[in-house]
Image (cartoon, rainbow, N blue to C red):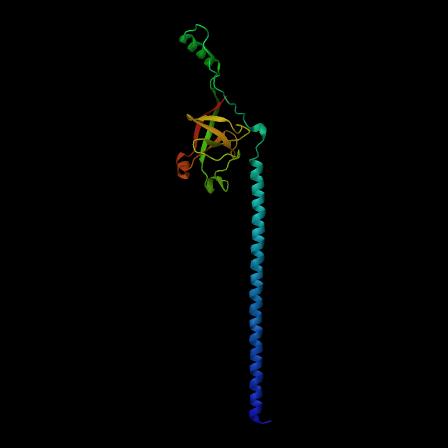
Length: 205
């Protein structure tokens, strides 16, 4: 074997060795990338699983908190109009008016009874105030400004008509405790502007 042939073989062996080293380095890099990707996928999967579990726990807690029983609802009676009174034989019109007025007085008038002084705050449907519930309420009704308030059902049953600062509201939501009423408004800025107030609260009997 000539010197030139030996040199050619040596260079060929060196080239093959370099190729093998490069292949090994590429394999190591690919293996590291695969391990990192698997770790990321596993981490994301665990995070989503934990988030789902937490969401289920929160939902269960809220549902327990917002559970409504039939006994907590206030019965709403429908007042039917007075029947027309036919005139009696020979009865003048003035007598008919007197009899009608007498029957009208027999119908019990609306009565408001004070239940004490309550702390009044304000909330809206944004995530800061209501989270994911938005316009939903514990009673199933949709929140309405100048109507919906949140109460402690142990103090004020859901469905109760309230008079606060000369305005009439209905207890449709929960989420507060004790002598505390949360009044719904559409504007978050208005809620902040109203702050915390204290008012005498009356219920309709």
